Image (tube, rainbow, N blue to C red; front, side):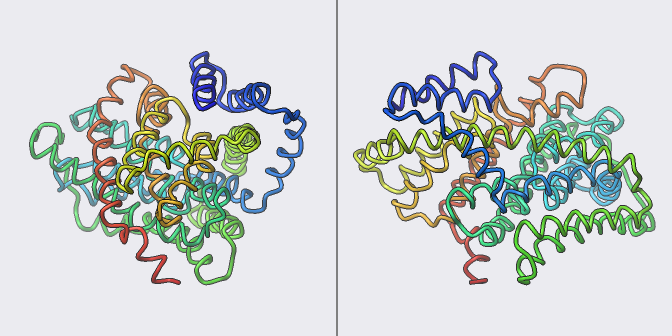
Length: 427
């Protein structure tokens, strides 16, 4: 049953069938092979139930928030301000890429949106300042992955819905690891540029007057982050209501900066509808597949199989890392999360791992999937913005950051308090 599931899933993906359709087709195949009941009759009910989940309404709202930041030019102004503060570090503007990704991630909740937005405004600097192009591209693709770890993260919402884990607790747990991972990325860039100084490009300088004058452009992400996260922890709003507050705050800020227009709003609405439709289609297929998994008893079989292996907690953790690393080469993060979390999360819970910590680890491993070929979404996003050269340049540029993320996952295993300190102190 396990091999039939993986074989049909990977086979359909290799045929180029869209992910949402692949998940639904795998569900139909497994239902036909192993279920005595006509499970396909449940598709309409699943679609209706998923569409009416109050928590999931936060997803299109966070997508809209990111679209408004991009279309209004607030993200571009943020990056331009960071450029003035980062050139003294080894690697120069590559640190600006990572810092900008971390700040945008703290407002948008989407890795693809983060990579696309920062890549759009940053790529013009590659040849202008003679940076190592591969490493520069890698900072954008890897920095973009922070969008699903730093709150407000869409993937953390999904994990909370799938496992009935507190989303505020997950958001608290994601803050320190998210920004610490951004620091890991910057440290990686600094080490590489100290080893190969010419990779760091031509150093630029800025006066303190220009730096101070640009500080107001760094305020919008901070205000939006505080309006979203602060409203949750002050008890004023749920995660969904906080997402709506974030959208309102973004519109008010864009209007205050005089960069809001009817065209900006219409473009943001169009981008939101396209992205939300893709996300919901994937979720419909994945939820149906999960129903089939439960009906045919696959999660129980997997749990029994792993229990029979008598693994230690570290061996189980290592198995989960390898599993997601391999699966991430063939699946997009959203569909991978909805399809695997109902199986993996109970296994980790049975082994004694905290469900909040498990959520951070799983999302971190999903981040690696965003920059591993052949289906790393951020790789294609950065290459599409670049419009020249080969995607292999982007892949090679992300390799040091893949290694950093794997090392960081083991650091979280050794010191779970990195993720759990804030949630436990808030309790």
